[in-house]
Every structure is written in structure tokens, then in C-alpha cells.
Length: 418
Image (cartoon, one colour):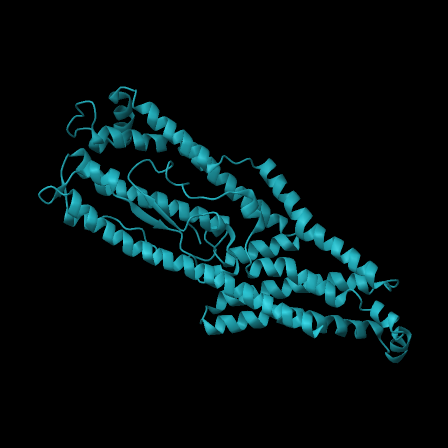
């Protein structure tokens, strides 16, 4: 038992360290990208300005702006969707929907494997540790021919077994709690998320301890091998089979349009706009933005105003599909939360991902922040673009910058509430 507990402590410590190193890498890449963006803008101004002025259309087309999916303080315990969502993206003034999903990785085998973080170890390994320590509570005493002797010594056998189960639950919980407390103290992490993680850990290990004790303390639970096989079967059902069946049901119940399909549709709309009369693009655009209706007219075969207008109208045509996709993702997340009331594995995973700001709700909030940033970019460049005024170094340096320093908000919701 001692060797098993020591090995478990090592595994938990390694899972925390692995998650921490992943998040540190993401943070360093974001910091590097911020510095690179500043240099890139300076280089763009230097090589593309004409007598200190730059054409607004060229700025909108050639100048990239970074957006960041910045991890939270406790994201290392559950990386969640950070496996598939890029933490640094570059966007331009072009249509947003053709850029938003670049860099996502949805390779099914990669996502299925997950990552070795605290949430993975708690959900899958803690039950196995409980099974190893509690499957033979009675059977081991029977095998050693001590069971009748023990029962004759104690006045209340139930109280005796309760204390034995309680001591093993405390051991299992400490295996996860001690490295976590040490890690939080070393890095001066916030107290409130720590208490949430400790509570989730204690409740999850308590549930599995209660389940193991219920199996191993039955009146005829004198066969340790049978108990182990029964509990292992329950582990397979609760940790592997039922969560995957629930996921399949969610995908069937809430079918989701893939982001790459939205990007492809946007590109098709943009490509089709080249063959349409300019008036077919500009008329609905000016209906949405009447403030630019009386600006200088579009002449010639090509004009930047016409180009960016049909780029944006592609986004407008896809608004209903984007909103439907967002609602579907949120409905899936809400349904998974409800499933957690009946499946402890799903409950623990979703709760830890919420604390780590790695769940769907925080991802949708991040997407909304990108959309708002793209709108700010359009509002900053459109006056120069439609009034056909040149941009200078001062205007470019004062253009909006995505706020990557804002920590993830606990309990964020895509409607903007926290």
C-alpha cells in the first residue's frame, strides 16, 4: 500500500507540473507574439509608407493583428479545449468568419487522448486507487482468518468498518490534495479556486470510496477477485462507456455545423461577389452603414471600399448560422452539466474545466471578444477607407490592440454575464 500511495503522489505531482509547463509555454508564446506584433507594425509602416502616408485599403489588407486565448491562473489543472483552440491567431480587416477557425485542430485521435493534467488523473486514476485500497476490506480479513475474531471484538461492526473506510478515503484524498496545496503555495495561487478544486476532489473521491465500500462490505463480499472485477466493470462504465455514449447522444441531439464549413461558405460568398455588379454589394452595405453612403463613389474595376464591403457582407450573410452554432455549443455545454448530476466523472470534469476557464462558455466569450475587436478595427479604418483619406504613423500606432492581459473571468457566460 505504501508503494502504491508514493507512486500516486508522484503521478499527481507530475500531472500538475505537466499542466503548469503547458500553460507557461502558452503564456511565453503570447508574450513573444505581442512583442512581434509591435515590431511587425513598425516594419509595415517603414516599408509601405509613401511620404509618411499609407493607403487605408492596404493597411486593412496587409496588416495583421494578433488575438490571444489567454489561459487563466488555474488553467493548468484542466487544459480542456485549449488542446484544439489556437492561443495566438492573426486577423485582418477581411471577413472574420473566414479567419476565425484557422489553426483549430480537431483530429479525433488527438482530442480523444487528451492530456496528462490534474483533471485527467483525478477523473480516471482516483477511482482505480479507491478500488485498489477498498476492494478487499472484508475479503482480506477472511483470507487471513481474522474476520470472525474481529467481529467478536467490536461491539459495533458498522462503526469499525466505517472508520476503516474513512481512513482509506482520507489517504486517497491526501494523495491529490497534498501536491495541490504544495503547488499552490509555491506559486502563490488564488485561494478561492483552490478551495473549489479541493472541494471537487474531496467529493469525487468520497463518492468512489462510498461505492467501493458498498461493494466490498456486502454480507457475502468475501471474494476479493470478484469485488475487484465488479468495481473495475463499474469504473469502465462510469469513466469510459457512459461518458462516450453521452457525448454521442449530445452530438446527435444537437448537431453542430463545423467552423471550417462556415469559413468555406464565407470564402464562396466572397468569391461570388467578384462577379456581381458593385451596386449589388454596396446597396445593402450602405443600408447597414448609412453614414458612408454619401462618401466618394466607387469607380473603376477595383476599389478597396467595394472589396471590404463584400468581405463584411459575407459575415452579415452568415450571422444567423454563427448565432445558431453558438447556441448549439452552449446547449451542449448545458446538457453536459445536467448529465454531471448523474455521472460523477462528467461532473468532476466539467467543474474542473470551469475553474480552469477551459470550458465551452469561456471559449464562446473569447470568440465574442474577437468579434468585438474586429468591429473596433473596422470602426477605426472605415473613416479613412470610405472618405479616401490616408493613414499616418500616428493613426496606425493608435489602432485598437486586443487585450491579452485580461484574466479569464470565473463563471463567464457568452451573454456577457459573469
